Length: 232
Image (cartoon, rainbow, N blue to C red; front, top):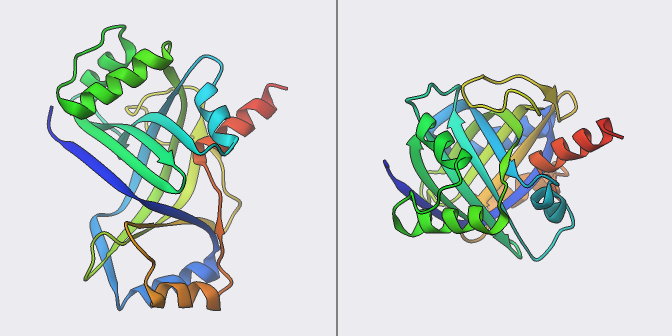
């Protein structure tokens, strides 16, 4: 096992036109810079129960919800490190726990019936999640191209832009690479503001000036709705 990571923050989402994105990017130049990944392709495999309970419950907008996914930056080889992530949301606060494992070890662990194979508190939480929901299996692959930035003076304030969001319900492996059906309409991107506190005044100003308003948006939710519609 390579590392443990814990995040606790607000994550606020906005759908932007190309023009709105340019305005935000122009305003960001003075205050923010690209993070270590810069522009990258993120691949995710979401796990769920046979009846898709986790995403169905999430779409009901409950006070508390949670999900399990495995993530890589770019197409993963079997020996590459990937993130196994347990993401929870209580009211408006997002709590994310993740561990890093080689892809083949992560897939073996998530596909097995064994528990207790991970060390530490985060490992115990993931074990309990798998034990509680049982029969978890890969359900949807989602990929997107992301540009990520953080504030020069406060790296807890981050902004990401996701484009070319694709989903599929086959080849559910991080080793297969990104392809699938598009989620967003053309010339649209998803902006996420991630912060442990408030949003800087300069950012609220540029959003107000350009008619940018927060929205509810779930990539997995959009994929599930499309999947359910196709099965009708």
